[in-house]
Length: 144
Image (cartoon, rainbow, N blue to C red; front, side):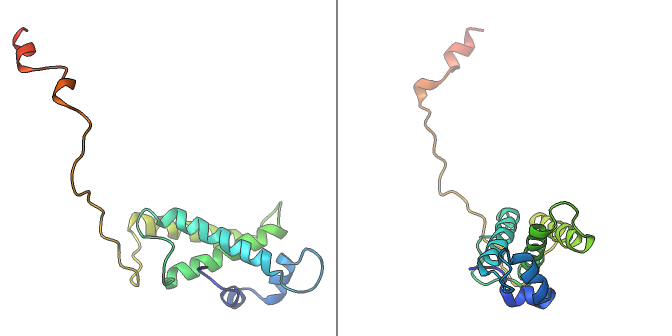
């Protein structure tokens, strides 16, 4: 499940810009495949950061993750057009989102609507060493 939708992107970026960023064949329509790829790439970045703290992918998308996904998607779309000089508006979306992801990962920012998973504790300690693997024994140490 994607963390943001076309509607989320349209709420922050005019449809004309989405067309400009996705339409490679001048059809004057949003290329849904390019938009989906930008969303998928954004979500992959999010998962890479927050998987250290939360179980991903999220079953229910937290508001903060939806916001970050939307901003990263817009950056990904803009980077299709601006291959040399990215405008500050889009670059700032990216850097702010990455800062926020780092803060989520470190625990500095808490997502209220997502419970942290219980730490996984192994049931027992398992070893492959036996008594005959010992390098030092009481008898050997007494020789010193």
